[in-house]
Each structure stands twice: as structure tokens, then as C-alpha cells.
Length: 430
Image 1 (spheres, one colour):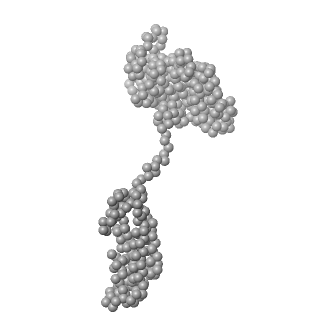
Image 2: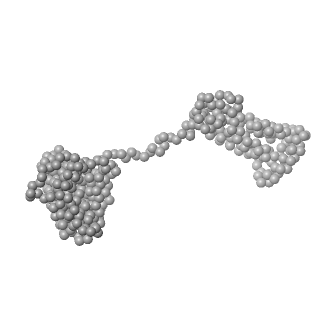
Image 3: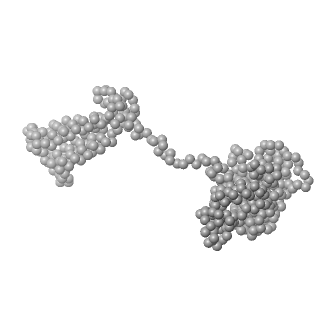
């Protein structure tokens, strides 16, 4: 034991400071190592919690409830007492004079590099030992607790698994996120072609007038405008009321317009002057479904108008419902794909794409196979087919629009949920 070795030195004269420094340097690191090795059982260091933990000496039982601090403090006190005794002026035996002389001579080289008083060395040793004691847990249970990670430490993130507001969950929220990338605040003209109860119109208004004040719009070189359209009087009233309840009254009065009309045809606006036009097809919840429901003919005609109004960099957004009106859904899908084919370099191009559209009977069979339901009664002779309806619309967009117009079209649909709404988006690149 190092402290016993220290006590064996009994110099005949008071030890020189350099010799004292040498002895402490030799002894204190070993004392520190002794504290770590002999005072803390191996099982305690490993953080194990057992009632039968045994120390390295004598096989004595070590209870997790007992504290380690008194044991370590007692050992430190005994060690420091022996070190102080060694540095005192107690006489030494003559037989150790040779050892003392040799040690003193050896330590003189060290003294030339470091001249530190005995008291400073002792103070430094005490501080070092005190720090070691303060870092020793009171019990094995405390030591184990320190080694275990806090389960709540990294759980500071916000849970974003909301239903309606998360673009990764619903196509409605995804559509809103895409709109935000396109709309130019206080500059664009925006159209909600199926206002309904006004929820989409309110989202569009908040994107268009982000600060909620009319001053920015008045000072702008542009004249921003939000136009909401619905064929039902009740829907128009609901939309207007929602806008009035949530927007600056001056904005509602000067820069919004609610039209009680069909979206076919669209309002007379200059070509390529609208930043975004959105559709949410189907019917207004609670309304007469048979009387007020979007249909294939008026929807495709309106989409052709919208394609001519969208500016470069603008977006055409259509929410379609496969389980509600299969003909309208199929026609929307082919129309959106058709405008994407305007810039196609495939053989046949967009006209070849038109010729590849199947007959209504084939489309109905496919739709029933995918989405279920019963086949409808065969169409009358004077009713347009899906292929004819899409052909007329695409030919008009191609003839009346910019010759080299280019669109990027996407079909956003959730997998494994065939009856969920599908979001079609078409951005005009040029």
C-alpha cells in the first residue's frame, strides 16, 4: 500500500522541499489510483445493481443502500495524514541517510524545473481528491442511473401527425403547400372555381394577402384579386361570410369577388393573367347532390378556359373523387395528361395520345374493377364520350393558347386507398 511506503521514510533532518515534492509526486497518484481501485467494487463501477455485491477485500457484503462517500473520505484522511507525517521534521534513522542523500540528489534536477512549495502541492492534492470524491455516486443505483440514457432527452420534437394540416397525410394539405409555392402576394389574380363553403378561398386569400392589410395591395403596381365562383347561392353566402369574418374588411371589399354562377365559362380575363385556379369537384355537403354536382362536360370546358388563363409559372389544381362520377374523373385525368403531352417528343405526340383513349365502355369496366360499384346504363346517342370531350378541350387549348406552351403535370394519389380524393396539378413552365 503506497501510504505505508511513505511512512517508512524517516529522514534524520527535515526533508528538503524538492524531496517533499518528489515523495508527494510518487505517492499521490498511487493514492488516487488506490481510491479508485479499492474503494469502488467492480460490480459498482459497471453499474450493476445486486444485493449481493461484494468488495475486493474479505468478501464483505456491500449493500446498494450504503453510501460510498464516508469510506472514501476516511481513506483520503488517513493517506493525507501519512503524507503530512513524512513531510514533517521527525528524525530519521541513520541507516536511511544514504537513501535520503540519493533521493535529494535526484530531486535537485526536478527542483530546477519546478519550484513549488510543500503547501501548494498538498493543496493541489486535496483539491484533486475532493473532485474525485464529489464525482463518486452515493450508491450503485445512482451510478446505474447515471449510465442509463434519459428516455425523454431526445423527445423534444413536435408531433406533426395531424390529419387536415399535414401535406404528407392529405391531398388537400398537399395542394395548399403547392399553392404557396406559386402565388405571388399582392400581385396575382387567383380563382377558386368551386367555392363551396369558402375554406379554400380563405386559404388562398391568406396566401395572397399575407400581412392581412390592404395598404400593401393599394401601393402595389399590380391589382391583386381573389375570385370565388359557385353555382349555389348558399355556397356563395357561406364563402363571403367566412372571408368577412377572417380578413381585413377593406381587402374583402376591394380585392375579393364572389360570383354566383357556373365556372363554365370562366370569367372574361386576359389570357395568361391568372396565377392559380383551383377546383374541388363533387358536391357541397348537405346540398342536393343530384341537382348541384359537377359533371364531365362543364368541368372539362372550364378546365380548357383555365388552361388559357394560367400565366407561365402559374398552377392549375384539380381535386377529383374517383368514387363520385367516374366519367368526370376519367375525363379530368386524360385532360391533365393531354396538356402535359403538348411538349412530348413521343411519336404521335398529343394527337396520338388522344387516339389511345379507350371507349367509355372499356373505361367503365376498368373503373368498376378498380373502385367497385355497378356499371351505369349505356349512354344516349347525343351524349359526348370521354374521348370526344377531352379532344375538343385539348384542341381549343392548343389552338387558342401559346404554340410552344409546356406543362408539368402530376397525379398525387394515396396508395392503398382507392376511393380517396386524387389531386392533379399542372404547372405551366412556358
